[in-house]
Length: 591
Image (cartoon, rainbow, N blue to C red; front, side, top):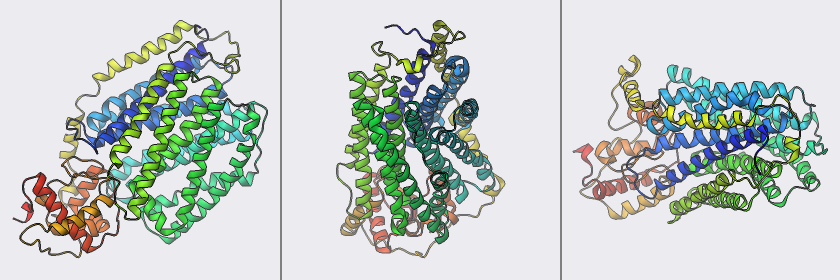
């Protein structure tokens, strides 16, 4: 069947781009997993990480969520006429990020396109906000409105990055708190409240209203703000903020229970198709899992590991982004016909589901093993790569199905006649213009590395006047007896600790992952510096110039894992052995 409705064509084009960006983000994620298995000499891990996160959050997350809101709420409005120009500009910003981040990471070009995206997102929200004002003030509308507010609040962290960096530097706690501010309100307000709001609105369209009191709504919204206390605790350990977060997660769990139990009760009355219903239920289960995991933060030991074990952090991000938002919005789109419910599409979504469940089990399972000091699964990185490969496979099938003519949008979406609609040929031009953007951007992303290097060479006067670094670092370790050779037994003990606590962020070669590779470290750093960095990490990051340089390069604060002196000495010995085997020499820093 030929596409005959402009709105239907606009929806298809929008969803093709959204799923396409999701596919690209999945391929980048699989590439990141490959770094742990094989050496990839051409690509820079950090740049791939930044590209993956931006395309996943903005290319897939924002586009799919804001797009669903537009298609659900606008009614008779002509989507192309109202949002077409913004849509094309949004693609320019996303494609700009896609082509610039792999080349230069955070640089002039990539930051410019990111800034353009934020400004365009404001325009989308402004138009949608006016539409919300014309709707009955139901629970679904209120939740959607609060999700938009949450998105706006999240961007305050982005605007604060520049002033914080200029005045306090990238090593200051405020720098990391601004990033956490953005992520916190993106996940807990924008994605969670937006998904819940759309599910509730979906029920309201079918005549089923969900009622909660203003107090219950206040608990839900208030918990979003109060749970940011965990990020403050991470930057500035304080009993006050810990107890605020503990109270907040309990309030959040109660609010989720009061709302979700009502949503679950009305699901049978919605007459959902089995497959979309399964995805929506999985989204709700993911929210329950999120609430349970956050309730565990009332225990101080769990609160500490929640942000020191990186596997937990990644698993939590995926639980909200993939489990709650992707399956929730995806299920609604399949039910409404905006995504095809063909066999290939269902197989694709099943593969995505398999990848999600597999990676979550590995991330949380291996994270727990690290916490319990049980070591690393020998096949962990390979298993994570295999499960991650299911995402692009499934998304490729879903993406291809979007070009099929075998599915038709339901009449509930396209039933509104509009004499002012754009004709089909005009809408087809939108797709042509969108594809043409790629060619324009190929010439706009060059020179990124040059601008980046020039900015790093021109340090500020304060940096120029910084005192010389103590080659032994800052801490109680002033002298280390290395002995005449490598102690094999001690090195084996150190390897066990490295496997448990270090390999999630560091490789044994010279390639950077989250942190720098270990190869050659004993030739660059004195043994006292290495052990102080392991045992006295907070002071080193706050006071040692060399540690601060690494922090500025990696943009990830190394957690304090409370490693004892004896274990640190074993890690040092393993590093000496590793350098002897891989670099051909060791201990050059003390010779």
